[in-house]
Image 1 (tube, one colour):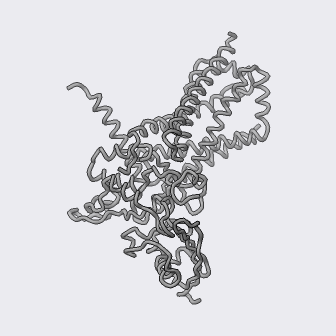
Image 2 (image 1 turned 120 degrees about the vertical axis):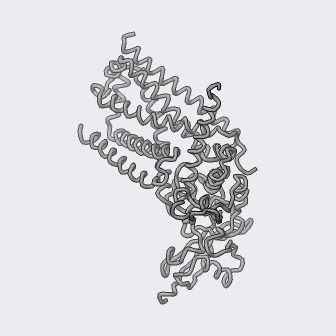
Image 3 (image 1 turned 120 degrees about the horizontal axis):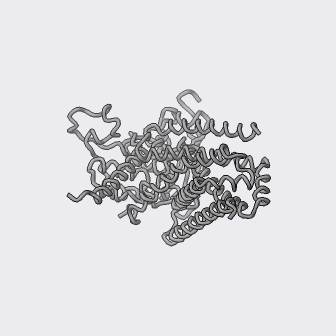
Length: 128
Length: 248
Length: 124
């Protein structure tokens, strides 16, 4: 890690020590972005099974019911909700809306995100 | 130790040209109400004359003494020991992040100052324009004829705290963008907007608002960057409509 | 001149595109998720369900539009992260070309898949 700006410092993006709430927002946004992008391309590839007939697709759906995949899907949904809500805050700020109260808005949105994720987890794991 | 004397260990970042960085420890007897900068000066005066650091006004006007204290950007002339340590504790002092280190706690601020010049930052403004626009009601006298130094101390702590400035020296940085916003607010010169309407200008910011959190002088660079974005968007939209204006 | 000497105004358009795509994704993703998994019979968990579902012409249109926005937003966002690492002009050119190709390919592949499934279901 260098003191001057350098691309090798990128791991420090994800170090929240001694930083404020906004850094948590930045870290969350970046990690969810990377996770969602990975999921996007995996999703596109996996849906290719639709072109290979019912055995391929239905076989994949069976796999998707396993706990590991269900957990992964939960993470994806959580990431989508967090990234989307934080993105709304960023978009509003960039038009000059809510900039003076951006910390409070972030906290409020993350509380909403936590609630939505909890609802989703309940319906995913406890209603089948 | 009585209540007015604490024993605190100071770990100070040391780096001279061509040598690896390391930390030197100094165990100091301090008054908890004196400032971190006072202790750094005493360390220099009585323990190690090779320690290099910046200091000037000692009352949070010049911005020279910005350092990282226990990993957090602070103006050391107004940071009491009590705020960062306890009796028997430790204080780690490092130079500001995201600037090249010249010697120990002194960093190279030249790019920052030159960029401030480039965006036509004026250190003096009317009373009305010297503070944040949404605070005018509290601070301004009716006549507004008087001028004062603007809030920004040019301390560079905002750049030290910025996560984007960690990895790219090309990013103008919150201090420079805030200065550009300030200059635009006063001059309404559209060429300033073009200067910062750039991948390394306002659009590089990722809304971490660390700059606003660490600013010791109420500049709120995060707010100012977003205000610049709003101004740029308005300017772009008005350019589109003036280009496509009805034939009169 | 110590301010950036890159071409000006390259930032606003791409950034706006990223933000607008992002905001539209929130809307369309909500619809996509709700319709695909909560309204669609069986939640699209079998091949025949998917085929039947894609017979409604609105669905392929919605999915293709969704795909375009998502791929655009994702690749612009990734590019933004790469820009934070201060690549050289040469590397950035290759990133632009590479991401552009990935984007075009992903949209083309997704569009083909949607149309393939829709056609399959109609017995073609």
